[in-house]
Length: 101
Image 1 (tube, rainbow, N blue to C red):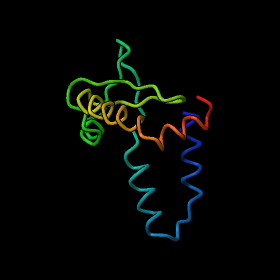
Image 2 (image 1 turned 60 degrees about the vertical axis):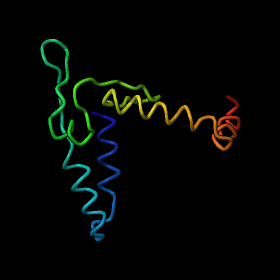
Image 3 (image 1 turned 90 degrees about the vertical axis):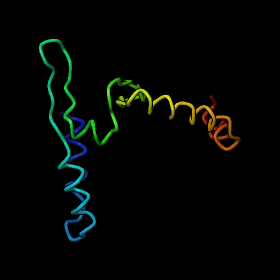
Image 4 (image 1 turned 120 degrees about the horizontal axis):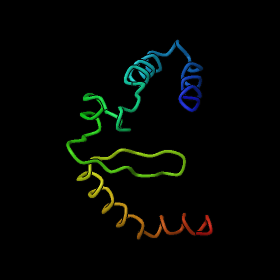
């Protein structure tokens, strides 16, 4: 909840004068859900979010440093193949090398 509050504060600081920013706030915050776990420790993702994310049946949780992403298994496998191809590109290898990795 604390991390979400930080995001809300940043969005609230956006100028209300801009129609584009008002739309962004409406869409970004309007689609938010506060969810809890059921008695078996599961989180039920609302149908609107599942549809938006393209989640059909099986999901994959992907850890990304300080958060995780929920992917449809088939979409993740396709994305993972793309990432494996992209990481071999010289520009990506150079960026990784700059990090000393």
